[in-house]
Image (cartoon, rainbow, N blue to C red; front, side, top):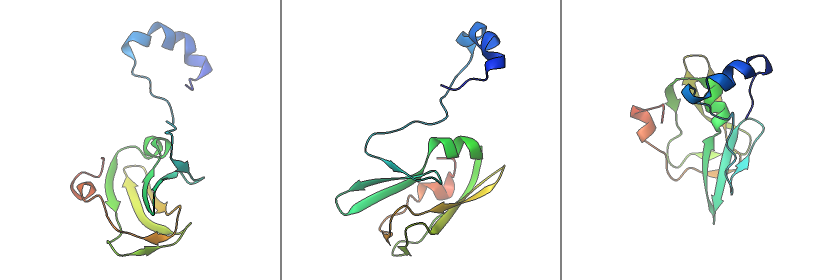
Length: 112
């Protein structure tokens, strides 16, 4: 876990009242891109998302632009966007293929 060195003494004294979270969580069976997307391949299907690090860096997400089902995506190309109070970031596809399912829960609750 990364902590700022200058605050380490104060943080150790307050450890019981602090909620510390690592900058990134690496999950087995996921492949990661340099632009902070991940992909989990299961047979001939893949699930795509953004890393914990990207989510933490963005802050509060207020809007998610999602592709329509049936949309063709190319590896390395943007297929959606995540907008937060801090910035808007493209979501790039780590693989090529056709979108078969979209998490529509994000339409009403983009912070999910």
